[in-house]
Image 1 (cartoon, helix red, strand yellow):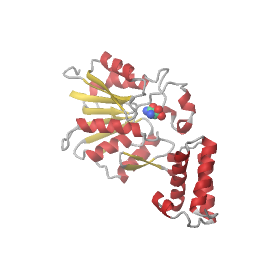
Image 2 (cartoon, rainbow, N blue to C red):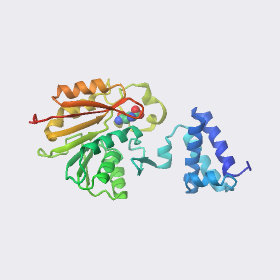
Image 3 (tube, protein in one colour):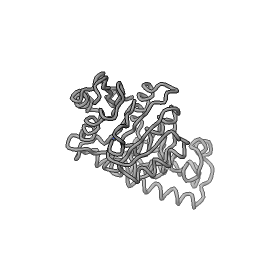
Image 4 (tube, helix red, strand yellow):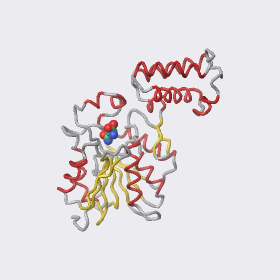
Length: 290
Ligand code: GLN
């Protein structure tokens, strides 16, 4: 491999990332390609097709800067400033949780419930980057989606993402869960990816999570405070036979089913993510609304 070539730079970068972060070499190689592609404003396919192409000193210097940030643990999504979710490229900043592939399950389940062409009302609680709300709004353009977050900084990012993707059937409100809604606001489907990690859980101090907003991750001693708060107030904002769908930790399925059962939800079911872990629990309140 010619010194100063793209191929040589990628190889060196891969070993740096393996060394610094203990990444699997294939993951480190992918991250190196994503960072160099970002510097050169070229797709990864270009890098792979042109391993002999020369890297300018300026590009090498910029690549080094990004690699150093990554070596210090900064999430790749924050360095690149974007992340792919449900086929959408979303802007992400340290003010928002990085959208996860697991959360695509939440969107997919919501879409199975919301018939195409219906003007259903959909609510996304704790929208963060807007990932879930925008994905639903784009897939169901006739539906009306409201997305709430308590963080004004997150809503700036979410609104920007909605604008980038031309999601016009979507409205953002700031506040604590249901608080910004009027008394009469009722939804056919309520979705949420609330914080659900237990305070003090070791994961909060590892990997990407160290850099993400704590308020989007941790929620009480068992990680269930937000889920309890949402479940206890959902009835006031659901249409008869409306659905509540909540993402949760991979070991929280049973606890979430219990929380929903205590609030008189019916048809309670936990759906598994691609790794086979219970990840989203759903329920409805047929005919029991106040
Ligand atoms: N799924 C994330 C994680 O475990 C947590 C997201 C959340 O708390 N909503 O890394």
